[in-house]
Length: 258
Length: 210
Image 1 (cartoon, helix red, strand yellow):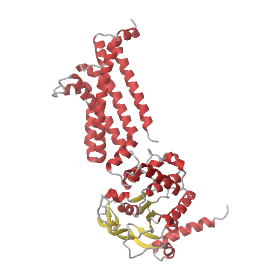
Image 2 (cartoon, one colour):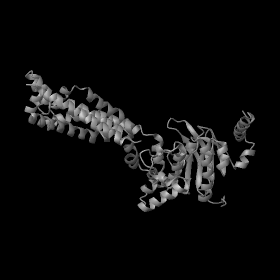
Image 3 (cartoon, chains in turn brown, cyan):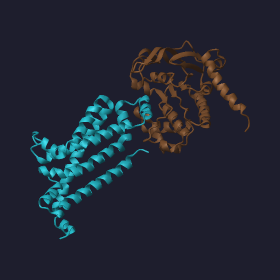
Image 4 (cartoon, one colour):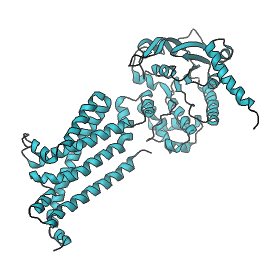
């Protein structure tokens, strides 16, 4: 599916300024558009403002000036908006007192789906994220980190939202599990075509998963590039990322067999 | 005449006073829970409330119980009957642990969990009743447990203003210099406190989220 650039963007940041209550400015006038069906990566260091941008989309935060439009809409019912957007966070945030099944079915329950439709949907989702059906009755603390994040993804997808916000979802996982989940993310996105905004500080992850990469530095948007363009970019900050990750690879490789 | 014999002989009166004691403690705890939990919740929502609410509950705790009974005596309707007065005083004492633990319990819920809930579109009350309170329930119960155990002891003093309860046996025993009479009040009170502590402690563990 080709994205059509003349189409109305699904998410649009217009001249966004965000200040903390203490007056410190985190985002200084930011414009960005997210197109239907793409995976837009927000790449930046910790504290650059990428998580803030994500929270502006589902209105966990309100911009100090400027506007964030979702599906062309401005102000509206926050609760409706949030239920139509899947949200996956790094600390996973599964409800520890609820079973996997109840965690996944949270939004459908809030939306008062009939019980049998919920049951079918939970099974479907467990299957989709590669979890055993028996997992449904377990509690989050009985699962491994990778399994927990699978549940987190399933929960975000439960009410079939068109938009998915993911805040370093694989950041806390070990390398092998992360690789596995990234692979599954790609095959999932191939089938589902969600509009995804994905926050990470890992260039390797950005290159692998993104259709476009928005580079954020100190509250400003530096540039938006495709992964291929990014690797060849002359932009000093983008080049610094490529160097940092490239050198990391080289030095790891040059140690040779031990 | 040994103590056991004394207990047997007076078992009817002891039982009656124990029930009276339970009534004082039960009603006052119930009131403290009904008032204290909402106050604790309110102080988590509006931080400006936190200091005055916890502060006043703290001040009440520092008033010696006999003096508090005295202060409340002139209050209309309340002062007219000793049991009302005792219940009000016990409620006031029980408020602090209930409010404080409600506040701490809710504030102690993992912020990531709360944020996930909010980000998924839970309303404030859905978040409170489906996430925050269930996760805070064991901490809140711990506060109720402290309140009950303290109340069982304090309620013995209510007998000084004629509110009844096991304190009556203790005060009578003191006046008559009769140790058996004192024990007849003190032992059941201690047993009540231990039972309440044990029972609520069990409930607290059973409801604690994994």
